[in-house]
Image (cartoon, rainbow, N blue to C red; front, side, top):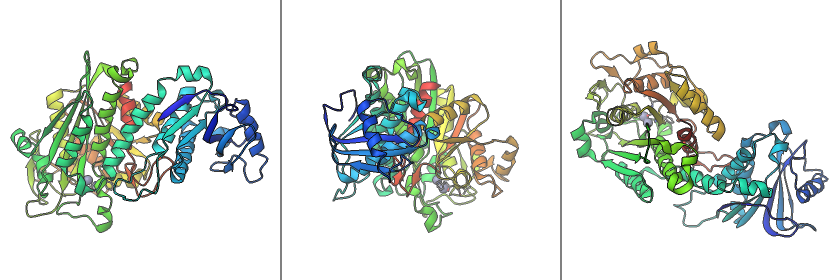
Length: 500
Ligand code: BES
Ligand code: ZN
Ligand code: ZN
């Protein structure tokens, strides 16, 4: 679907041509394009300011049904994200118009002060992701994704970046997979259905998939995961995705929270609080989709060896449960025995994410002895309060792992912010009757106390926790994502796995 091309614009016919235009600098090199921009800027209403748009429906020199000029703002604002957003919005517009093909004029990276690969990557990501429409439950499809998205570059770049389109397609298809899972309603993704769906998507890959059902979980002692699922008619599952390329030396475990619906349990949420809780499995969606993507990128397929993720074994661990109130549900005050052997007093049944993660983390540590463990979870409303809808929080006791996460976040614009993890706050998790309480005895610093709870189950393993309660889901659309699941974390984890 994504293609690079270096054809001569004055000879080729295109359906739609999109040209990014900078307000105060010429960023293109192609003579035909710069000529077009000169003409566009003669029109008074178009300056090239951010979100300015102008359309030519005919031109003497270029044969195109429409030429869309899109303003990107001042030269000082030119970063990859500006281009990602521009391409995303452009494609969203074309999807509404049911346009089949588009050609984006890629500016000169040098003139933008950017790296050519970073610039082209961002444009491809924005265009691919902006092309996704979640309409699987609509009979009448009002929008249609663009079929062919091309990028006009100079011939030398076309050669140099020849592998890029397939790579970006593979990675962004992972984001789209996660989005679809997150946006899917909970009646279509019970823990068992979701486990099957993940296994189905992993079928064509070289991942080894294991699904533990409630009997296996009981035998192995997953007391916390079972307690969270106890109120639901649909029992919990644990999905394990094992990516083990030959010769792997390190092992990384990634754990993702998979609460397929969080009603709060007996500590039931308010109507507003429950509204978006089908998305409480966004961590599992991101981890599952990232593993499937990494495998698709693998040495046999896309030469990941060259990039560096093939020197490690990567294990995805996805605890899946539905948190519901019922006669069988866990009660506030219940004490459970977790996989690790530690006992937990359930001070609040709505703090269920940390419970299922506790079991999954302890299992990962014991079974795979990973060199590092990362967990990703829609864990706390407090995190959403602190950082808003676009930024995830990173917690760790060390500096190296979070630093790597922040670098990947920067590169992918899946933004993260490091938070403190003060050990003395652990006091807030004391229980009179058990080893630890899942409910802190203070209303403040909820994202921190949740992270500290998890830290009790990692042992000596290097560990970082990413709270994605904010950026995982929104009722609003963005520059390159529709309303609903955002697939946040897939691009971040894929990049991170290559860097670690
Ligand atoms: N799934 C929620 C956290 C959440 C809230 C994610 C809003 C996304 C948007 C989590 O299970 C939860 O309910 N946490 C409680 C913990 C509290 C009871 C200690 C919270 O944050 O209020
Ligand atoms: Zn909850
Ligand atoms: Zn939850």
